Length: 167
Image (cartoon, rainbow, N blue to C red; front, side, top):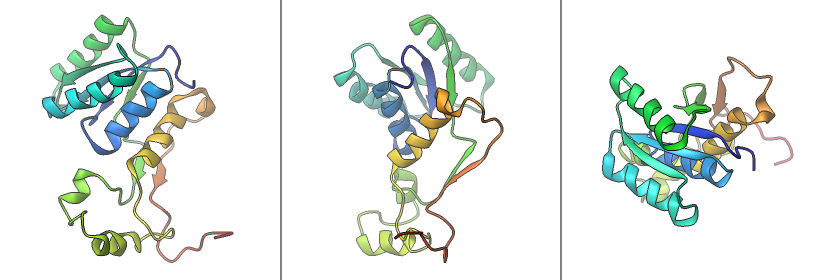
């Protein structure tokens, strides 16, 4: 397990990439503070995590634009789990079109033709999945990336018109 014994705060964890990241981190051994503006959806993420991993997650309703809310996230991690090792708000990861509720605000994600049209805008010819972005977050937060600092990673399926080697 890549995050065994670590404690992480994942913001935006009520849905989409944040939810996938919180779940993956818990699966990899972390205890997770699920932070989001949407309390009920954050609690749902905690329920999903704790159904398989009891005691490994807690929710905090927070707005990262407010210093007091950020402090409350940290305080919750320290009070509930005794430490804080990782804070994820995916600012260093630049996702392309990913099948999330946010994409659903722009297009009808139940329409395969619309999804396919968006996907054609990447070299891989498809939209991304939340867990694909979550795995990049995991990489950045585990010892595998111990010598990386200040990197910006595009997780976008590649630029349009680029070819995929071997594919």
